[in-house]
Image (cartoon, helix red, strand yellow):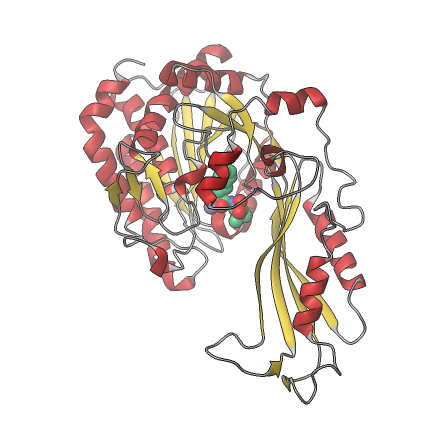
Length: 462
Ligand code: BES
Ligand code: MN
Ligand code: MN
């Protein structure tokens, strides 16, 4: 790749200001109040792909938010890379915890990002990382160095489960045909420790309701004489882990892939400081399943976490009341071979079975998806590895992530191609949290590295 560094230096300010324009539009897919902004973001992505030099760019309507599709086909005999990303973002709440407006991007230096980081909702997840691909494409087209065909598929419903994308993919297999899928929507270990994500966890997300008496009751007149749904719910939830932090749902671990001692030893080579981890989160100690390290607990092991719990009186002051109902939202992160629908059913059966008489329990499944593992003995992985080696001067470490992108398993099933996860964010970039940010260095390094992937992938396929 000739002069990619020069191209970036020349156009750096524009690359940043274009991303700012994208970040200024609050494309929150979960909240219908932002519907117009989500659609406006799709149009902005469309224009950016046209400006980068795609031959065809279309807005593909779905039952929900549109999918932006673009392509540049140079020769049917050359390989095709399909880039996937998402233009929707998580809600910014709690807004009062942001140090600046989530939709007024600003650059501030941080300890991890001395060269400055862009603070805005979606900066890292996923507008900033998605836009690296648009700018890498611009570079390759404008300097006549695009070595193969490219297709872009950027959706607006990733943060709410990608249901409509699943339908779109199943209905457009020919259009989406490719040799490799490339995604930047994950992270890496550190700026001086490049890594490639080789695994994503699956997910099962459920909501539970515990119903007691038919109305809220005076906690003096009735307390002690009826089942209190909040007491019961918390007790039921507590029983889902044993004293070793193993999950107690019968059959939950049955299909879990157990890694060999060699694989675990290989994983343990990734640099990790427990002290720094604890310090960054201001916790006295890490916590989790007995017999596993922190890096194992958040990547190769399944988990169960309450994401929200409510019921009764939570306003100012005190109100003596026994609520009629209590609720919780629970997520289970799954690992290879665990089937999310099966796990959802196991949870439902178990949770209903542990309900004492006197309450009625209802379990409502939300969304879910399968986990994913990328083999590293493929051309796709080798091309990515060589690309990082070229621009970072170091071989990247393969590392499984704890997060989920459920659509990736579906890509493999429907399109029969592997996905390469080239993430450039850091765990400390606060995705989904207040003060989300993305390092300027990371943004530009991504733009620099991506063209090499195309080059090596094309060469290795020849
Ligand atoms: N980009 C994230 C997933 C991610 C982040 C994976 C960092 C690995 C490292 C994605 O946008 C996301 O937030 N996924 C959700 C699941 C989705 C179904 C809402 C998640 O992991 O909670
Ligand atoms: Mn994402
Ligand atoms: Mn996300």
